[in-house]
Image (cartoon, rainbow, N blue to C red; front, top):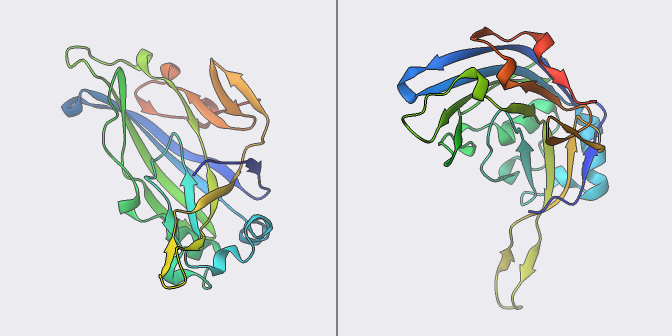
Length: 227
């Protein structure tokens, strides 16, 4: 599943809607909630994907993986399966990768731990509204987290195009389907990389400096752009 190329796709946007910082005493954590609108021009995506994988949306064993760093953790990838050949709009495409069981909500381990809440998705006039929540705490139960401990949080919105292949082991055997290969990841940011506060990211990536937040609402002015 190695990504061979990240590529900016016109029509993909990540627009901030709202956010908030809250205390979660029960888990010794601070919660950061964000709502973003994920924009995609379906025709552009389909045409671009077909250049890497011909008839991409028509094949049941092809797959897609959303990359939503900073917002949610998708565990693997989603096959088109029975929806292949019927994916003709943003809403149909979004249905492939927005199932709750595709997302992990456990704690990471070691040092400053993080846990993504399962995201809430809502198709809305051709866009996808995402309500996300992340929790941060120290591994050491005796160490209380403060806002000054929160890291830089960068927000990714990318779709990885994946192609699978049937490999016949012998003429007498049934076709063996191997895991799909990643061909390209389309994203809203540009391919140029730069460093912000010691963190590598793509130019145009939205991010927030966690240590500069405060309990209560997050404003649009606090959501920055790497440039």
